[in-house]
Length: 105
Image 1 (cartoon, rainbow, N blue to C red):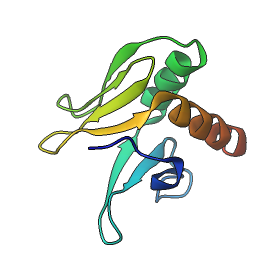
Image 2: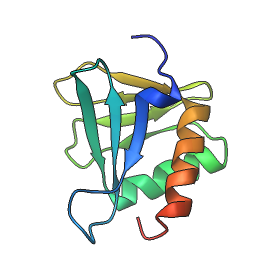
Image 3: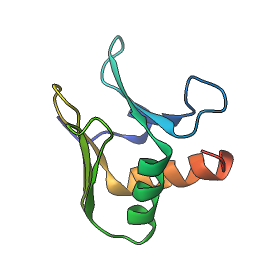
Image 4: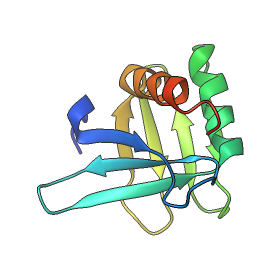
């Protein structure tokens, strides 16, 4: 999969009002998108890695999915699906904007 541009990726609030965390959505084609639900704890760990320019791996709640943060790109390995990728800088900017607008996420 090629590197995703910022308009092919977005961060949204959870479907349920008052629920902490967020949804990462990749728009793959006009008719296909993939969404990853990220718990508050994983969101805070990801923000910590990105804000310090660190690399690391975050194990998701299901025990089979993970987020691998590298200096240039971040990979999302979802159970039973093809890995998704985004440039780490694009993710950092999108996450900073999301957290600024949603401080209780």
